[in-house]
Length: 256
Ligand code: PEP
Image 1 (cartoon, helix red, strand yellow):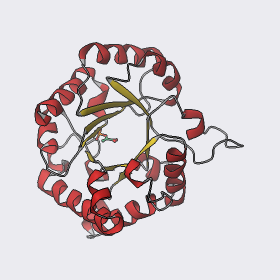
Image 2 (cartoon, protein in one colour):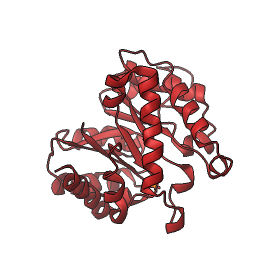
Image 3 (cartoon, helix red, strand yellow):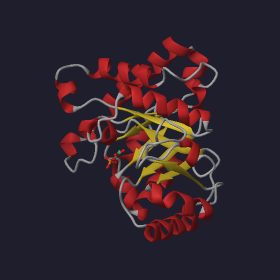
Image 4 (cartoon, helix red, strand yellow):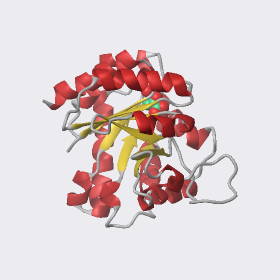
């Protein structure tokens, strides 16, 4: 299976800055068959960047999208509108769940809207620090995974990507709050088993599971060498082109 290195730029960079960054990335990366490099800029930058991008090297993702195709949904952008501009869209990011109160119902409808519009959904899952403390991690992840995928048909289920992002490990500067690779490995094995029990082994082994949570050049290798991890979702470190490029290079080394 391919490895995915996804950079989530969140609400950073002007359109001009996004274009300069992409230019640098295109210059410094070469196409590598087993690695898919994806960047998720702000919605406003997606269309111009889609004209600049070389899809053999880098793909675009949206950071979120509405489940409806068109209509009276002020401020929203739909998968139908994003179709042809992006190849991927992130759904269920912890910031969308916790800051913008996106519900499970919103997320599962948007995941199936993405598939309907030929966009690969990257479904984020993750427990909060409190849920972890109370031993609820596996219950929370089971619920987020199964409900997030519940509107996807069995024929389409192989088109999704899962990203495990423990909320307590996102954007931390403290080494103590980084997820230990052994713990990530355990959780990812749990998710793989859950996919196997629900969809069968063949489909389960074809679904990429990414890890995200304060990934940096210094720890990327440790997460990428976890056997069940098929790539990384990178926030903060993806804002610095040189760091993101270093993470891509690490993925290439691990892969070869
Ligand atoms: C994220 O927000 O998806 C993320 C993984 O961020 P960071 O790498 O900064 O923890």
